[in-house]
Every structure is written in structure tokens, then in C-alpha cells.
Image (cartoon, rainbow, N blue to C red; front, side, top):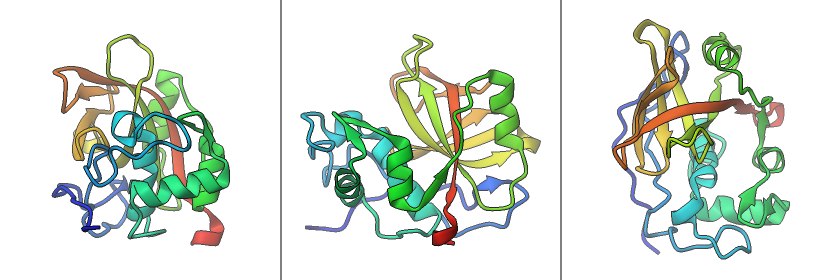
Length: 199
């Protein structure tokens, strides 16, 4: 098997803009041919079709230096072993624990989401961002929040659909999606940090 293909990053830090920078991030794409046809858990649904959350958690392992060599293939196996699947859906609390993460509470209120994103943190923090891509007001896509820059009203996320960074506005909680000529709108946020055992 050949090495995974990655896209060039434009982000060199994550968490609060006041935090120290971290090495450049190389983004993963759920539709990478190396894993796109692999099924999520024991379902009939492929990573390429519905693996945004799995790819997000894989990216988080790499960004927070929990597992620099993680791929959606290895994380899919860990999720199966941990019993983190219900059909093709991932139970985030189960998966987070199995991967060595602390997962914060679900935040859905617009003002609370804005506060959550800009709150200073003691540890490097990523965000599980649930997005509405289809314009239905229902979240249907996940991306990994990497960098919060309040000076520029900017949240940069790693988008598993494209394998590229995406810029969202902190004030509107929205921004152009990199695919489908549509707009992303943030519907919920959860903090993601390394567990104490992984620090």
C-alpha cells in the first residue's frame, strides 16, 4: 500500500490565536482513494460518502500529536474495536475516549457557540464543528476547528470533504463551502482536547 496523499496546509497554528504555533498541518480528505471505498464500521456506507466525522477525528489525532501516522483506515479499526459505531454513525463519546481525547459538551445556541470558540483555554483545543451544508438548517457535515483569530473574525477549519482549509466568520458562524457552491453554517460545537493520560 502506498503512502496517503495529503494536501498542502495554509494553517500553522491552532486553538486560540494567543497560543504558540504548532508545526504545519497536512489535511486529510475523506474521499482519498486509499480509504474512500472502505466501509464505516460494519455498515454498507463508505468513508468517501459519509466519513467526515471519522476523518475529523483522524485529523485531530495528527494535529494534537496523539498519533502522527493515523489514517481513516486505522481510526476506523479502532472505532470498530471500541464499539463506537451504531450502523454507519459514530458515537463521539465512545470514540473520543478510545482515541485519548476529552470531548466537551454539545453547544448549540448561537451566542453560546461564539463564546465557546473564543474562550481562552489552558490546553491546546480543537473543535468538532457540525455544519449545515445543504441549506436545510439541519447539520449534515463535520469539520475540525483549528484556529480562532478574533482580530480577523476568523475560524479556520480542516474540511474533510475537500482536504483543504476553510475560512468561516466568527460573527456570522458561516462562510463559503469549498464544494457545491453553497455556504457552511455552524450548528453546533464541541471542544476536543487530549486526555490527561495522553498529555
